[in-house]
Image 1 (spheres, helix red, strand yellow):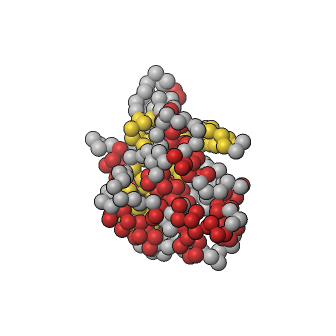
Image 2 (cartoon, helix red, strand yellow; image 1 turned 120 degrees about the horizontal axis):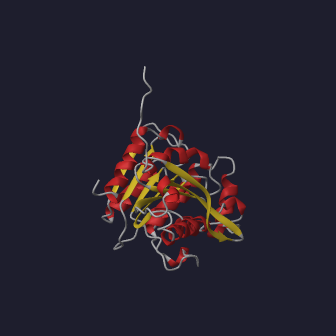
Image 3 (cartoon, one colour; image 1 turned 90 degrees about the vertical axis):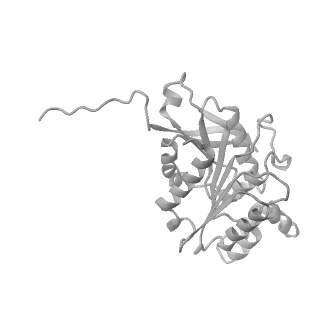
Length: 290
């Protein structure tokens, strides 16, 4: 039998590289990091620049430090399909960084990526944000508070943190309701002190400010939203997604919502159908000519 022959791959098609621990800013004396999934051409063919849409992904972590190894492998398919994917880490509430530190950091990361769009082959006009759980809470807030001075740091002031699309998976949209739902969970009280401070008289106001449900305003322009939530979620009640969907619809926002039947928080929520739904939604907005 003769030796078989295969063609080479001079354009590095479908080859994806993970750029780890990229520092996008510093806050309170600590570096803020992200990981990027980019095509090989970004680093191996520096003179080849093809602008690609960007997904800013925020992993759920109860607003602390996420397990980065769980979700990054699932995002490779998006990178192979032509997206740049940035997985952003933010300051941890458990380390003394209360709300709105996590939101400030995600917005700063978006501005950093716009400043460095050419280096990473990003099209700064096509930026989506996607989050899970607490990361989805951040993603929704990013979409609902574009360029809001309350959450703007001094980093990259000439850039915008506005996004073109928002994907939310099992997000706390009414933070007060979420903590009531999980009141008996170990560490629930401690996490609230970390997020909202020691003066409990101020908690309700801070929880409302951190709740996407209460940030939907009349006569504002918002990007399209995709909401997904399992109806057997033990950590964030499913009806919070329904309330968010209704609030956005009432303001005429372009929003789609999916109930994932019998799904709990994370775990059995994920499936090829869920990823396909997200992929199709992003393609419709970020790749309209596809």
